[in-house]
Image (cartoon, rainbow over the protein chains, first blue to last red):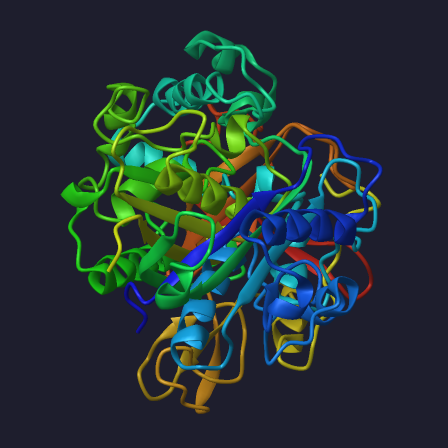
Length: 380
Length: 136
């Protein structure tokens, strides 16, 4: 598998972030894609591979004027873009394409040009979950958490701390949607959404997009941007039904994708300078820290409450503010990737000094799928 | 708690036996004839060993409350706050359900408490399996 042979040379988000009613979903994809091409000096004729989710790669190839020799429409939720990076790296290494564009755009807030959300009543989810009243991620992604809390003695106060610490990171980021510092009491006094989850333990809903451009590490040297190398990658899937997770205290998809990426990268946890863990809800960093092997089971909540992932801590986590405070269009994975790339380029608003390795871990659906990418800014 | 507007399942050929079962007040699982795995949701083969030799088996209806959320937002057919629960059946599989005949509060909904299946008709063809605190 690819190891340090492929690099990100172009990376950009949409020009604006937050509420963007003047652009439809595909327009957000295109805005980010054009920004990413400008970032590294490319035109559509220079792109020969396209991967996307939400829209089909056919839509994007046509809309942007790209003639691809390689397409990937893997659409497994918010971690689709991590998996696109993995597939793109393999495609470049095997010669299927030379320069691959990965796009995301989602009108999550304004809902312009988004396909309607629906669960078909004949699907397994439609038959065996939907009749019992879940309505989207806030009432589904959260279902395993009481079991996790009971198993490891984790409290709501500790889960609230995840949101408090991430707001500290967001306060350093001018593009973050929420930048005002919050306290544990603010979180615990916010509106109840789905017990034990309160509003400030849940992600934002915003409009935005992002795009990445990958090419071989060899070619990357000729680009104007600082190359960010793909050191290791992993992916997996478990179940579309949160009720059918094997273990409510751990994600099997995380436990496959994460270690696969670490093994491929040939690094240990001590080598990691910067970490992104997709945080649609405040419990996800807990599951991620444990399932990726950073901490023994049940210790992540006290680790975060102990400020180890906060500014100045030993393991900076979700330094853009995360889905809880930065932005969350629906499929957040692209924004986690963008922050990892910024950190590796050395241009993040809350830059980690001398960071050389960044781990970026995503989830899709409600623990349905997972993708992990390990980046480095050190030339092979 | 059944009110008009609740999303209802549409059975497929592979799941029809399950919904026929709930209509007859039986909770039906499947068991692999080769490796003995008891599984849910329904499918005409074993998810462990892929054997097509599987049998329908009636569950005891006894379970424990495994995890839940108490939803506070409006959903058609529900009056918030209401619990969306997962129970673990004595036979092993887990399933999503609602907990009925019980306050929808953290104090009343205690993890691992024993629960038992009850069947509530929704339409002429669809009966949903709910669970209530076990009696006795």
